Image (tube, rainbow, N blue to C red; front, side, top):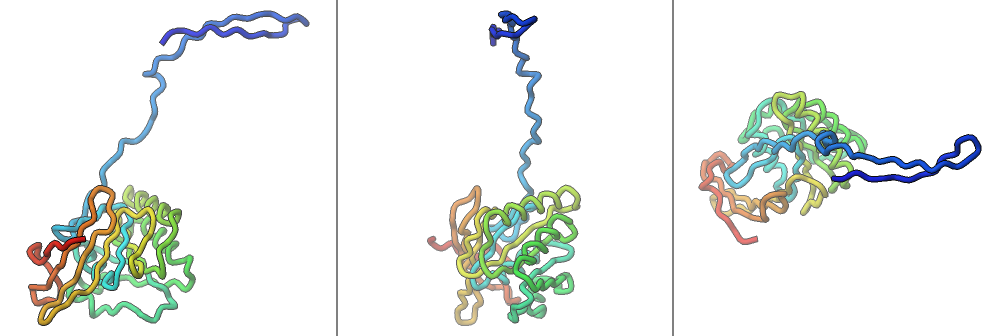
Length: 233
């Protein structure tokens, strides 16, 4: 890059003087952008067709969203913080978790105000104390709270041995903006066989897909990759 000549006027002793200056630009090597390199978050494999990025927030929706959250918890270790509305009488039954993982790992929190649901999740992810934070919501949150949850999970990843994972459980088809991925699960039981339909509705790097997963273990839950059958979306 060449030099540039600049002309300007100044007042000196009551008279105008013409000043000429030549500007030589600094080399580009001296004007570096100090930015931390992008790091791909580690993945937590749940099943052969499902893996969740740690240090991020994902959405689980559909009538079997709690069952899917239990499948995720089965792949983690350490405490599980389960946040649910204090005014909702439809509480999670710990006995139903025994087929997936030890319910003694669960710490239940029941805020009495709607705004405290996401606040509890945000503070929990930021602390990094619980590897898995599950929050049941009456509806999809807005984009700004989801971004705050992502930032909290990233902050927790800096201080925890394992980056925390956040799960938003929303009714119906969900629809939380800004989540890392969205998964829908519904019951699809048949005679003598418990089964579910699992659908990947949104992911940053993967297309939509769906599977029918069946319980062939006799434990009340699918455990093997062979239990999943792809279905059209």
